[in-house]
Length: 103
Figure 1 (cartoon, rainbow, N blue to C red):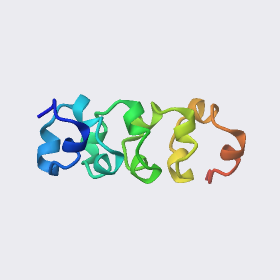
Figure 2: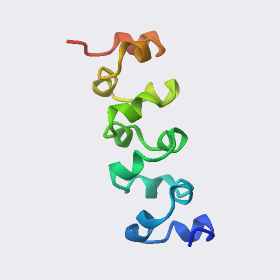
Figure 3: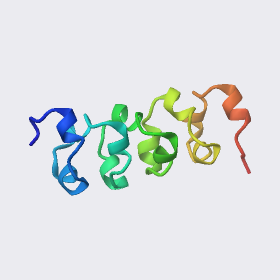
Figure 4: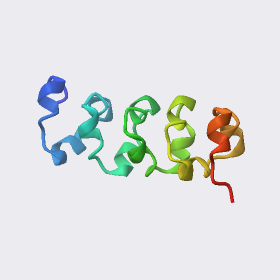
């Protein structure tokens, strides 16, 4: 199946998609990727994860989120950002940091 075009792969059912190699699944359209279980998404490369909408990324393990680009992190909800370590927060835009709800 993995040699099929992306157009064909995008039409497969979710059970079939879950059995494909990650390198194939990563090529699927973002709306398909969004429907995959979180444990599957967490196996993808950061560049694939960054294609997901911020609300999906926010549900991933914080260890995965830490590895994403600054540009991607800056799109996330403040509640997610405040879980990040200080050394990562220091790389973000100061305006975003000011808006964080630190307790």
